[in-house]
Length: 79
Image: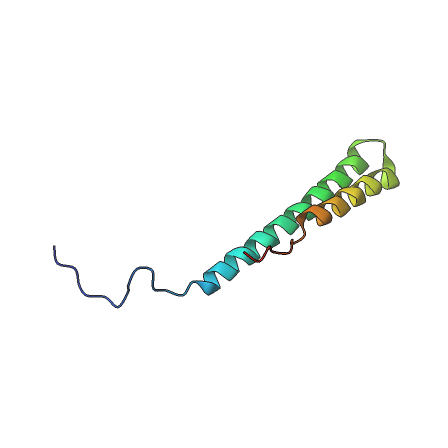
């Protein structure tokens, strides 16, 4: 089987843009998941229990604050 010559050489492509897009998508996904989880918690407590508005907002703010703390970008080790 004869393959036609090609200008493509495996491993020679610059993948900087793909890597940046992958990292941005990952960051966007984790922050979106935190916002959705906080919203589900707040509205679930507000409408499905007798917690009321403040009883649902306070735990939601606590979860949001903890999520921001744990999901923020960490400084690299220089590796």
